[in-house]
Length: 331
Image 1 (cartoon, rainbow, N blue to C red):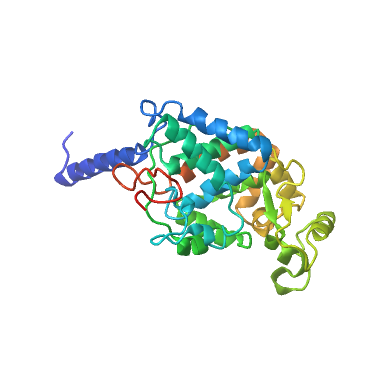
Image 2: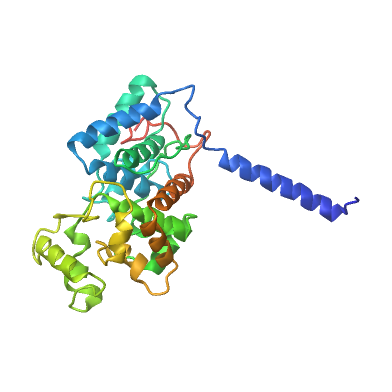
């Protein structure tokens, strides 16, 4: 069969595009450290497990760190950087200030990994591995973590303040923020399911309890009994740092109860409940699916964590492998 010159150019372009897509997908690999640091996964898991034994909520905190890292200039370990003469830390951004935690555990993991494989494993990859171990140790799914990220030499608190999903976002804003980093509506619902464990401060729910959207009344989507419980824990004028279980049923277990809670109008954060209570939203059917089948949720969550871990990684000669996760090399 004869091809016209335009057809030949099109075919060549198509083959090039396929090859380019393959290369971009191959930047990260499950076998990246097989030779240079073959025990890295077990080293990370052991440190996380040790931390969990004294602090059950640390596993949720470590997953949150990975999430908050990837949404700001990609999964590059930028959230771990402290303030310095050249760095304005993302730790002081509103979504992280006085709430992001687990940095000391990351330090401990880094120390253990450096003892075994000095100068090899990036802090960005440590966050990815710690997140998978944390979910698994809490009873959730496992997945093959793709590795090969390198660490940024910059941080961006401005992007952290504007691009990070926050508890007060509407469903429209949430979908846009996820879309901005290449994640779809299923990723949004699945990753929100990480709120099946962990805690959140009263600061982030007070408006729902007493003055929702400036009405002077509670959020009408809140279950009445659950509302009273939250008001007792978060009285007006009380300590805004008091913690509430994100999942009131099984707060330290990774399961699909989060979605059943939404069906019962017991989502703690506004951004949680909106996934189910926003009329006509594409998220509602996904919530129902995950509530009805934990296996489906686990599969989707694992897939979405891999998708999130692929957000703009630094690879090859870009960035560096920090020797200290809190500062750039030589800084």
